[in-house]
Length: 174
Image (cartoon, rainbow, N blue to C red; front, side, top):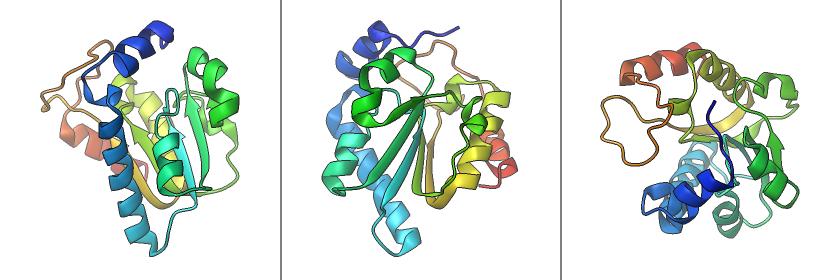
């Protein structure tokens, strides 16, 4: 089982020249996702669900771009949720546990970035099903495929084709 502990976040988020560790890189992704969601909705977004949020690194740039936005993050890392949960509104749940969270509302933007390529098909299906049900505006889903030249964490990488991701996403109704 992969461990998302302090050492993991130190390596890939704080001491990395790979994208996820670069604040400007994350900010540009946030701006892209917000622009797409607002284009679809025809208004400013007011709520974000971040699935597989890690330490909640999308929250600060979202709040800077849209002050007062409602943000909720879920992650499987006990470390990240214990450290940042109360301050950043992070809850403990991986993709497989997401259906049991009883989310009662929909969100203008649902984010699942840099997650799907580390989980099984069953976990991906469970998480994508919730994402489909809870997306009111747009879903920002980022996954690396076996056709991509990726830099960074290859541990537990799921060797899926672009076609396989399209199948999983379509089967969820997205």
